[in-house]
Image 1 (cartoon, rainbow, N blue to C red):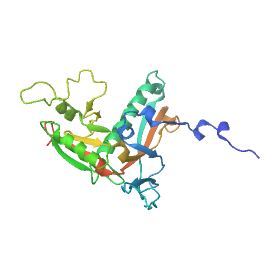
Image 2: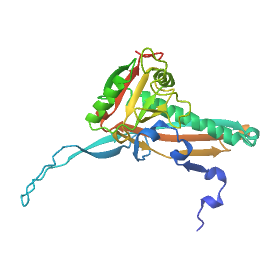
Image 3: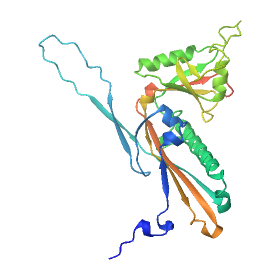
Image 4: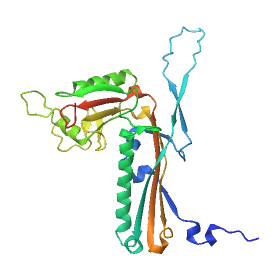
Length: 279
């Protein structure tokens, strides 16, 4: 009995699909830099259930030889659903086979996937994905105006809630406004230093991630351990058959992501009053 296998059939019956670790091809995506990746799921309907233990503060001192009272851990979970980001590119066979086309198209697709992921991660406001700017119970730190006092207070409040802040996300205009803050009314020295050779932009000892997809005049203080995410591999597929009659090639890229705040009171939002769009 003959068995049909992929090695013996035409390529149309077993098209190539390549998968890449998102950390390798989309390293700048905010979801990879500011959340902890808990797993990966396929499909719009399945969910990733991420368990966590709520802090109960039940540890006590006991005398030598005394019986230790038991206490039940606070077990909870968040449910993450994902959505698929996609990009489809049609290229003539002649264009596809040009020396620089593959690398240039790959770079463009990577930028596109990252841009859509960042835009959703920050500003999405429809189930199942709610962006950090719209998540419930996130701490509002108010406006940063002539000094960093409001931001200092916000970070302190987050830490008082058990947070370990790991980064600040700002739009470029807000970062520029923060860099212009002076040490005093009659001084020209910048509060954050000259910044002419910063290897990594920092503020309050926290790394700064700048994103043009966060509204102008807006910032977020994040704790990476307080945001759970589901992130799949980046999948790239090419086909010479979908556009066979046009002698063309299709390149398809997909990436499935989702996230949920585990402890929203460990995340903070603020505005930068002196930035365009700030309040």
